[in-house]
Length: 103
Image (cartoon, rainbow, N blue to C red; front, top):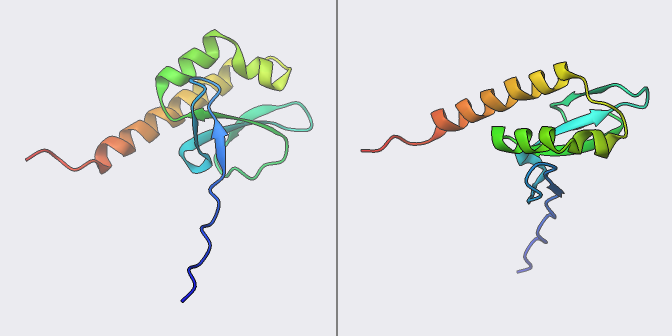
């Protein structure tokens, strides 16, 4: 019997903590061809992408060091950071609810 070959998992680097993680675990921020910066929850929008872990500390590091601005070459508006903060808080809350309770 032959084994099926393992499917390769795409890996991306977080701009906040610089850790490599599977693409599905990260939040994608995209700069569209028109120059607009936004959050891409589908991971399919066209444009230049940068990735962040779904944790507030990585977002804070990336914002403080202006890593998204450097990745995109354009200033990132405050409303994008606010939307990212909301998305990360929702993701953290969902992760807490999914954890099994201690007995």
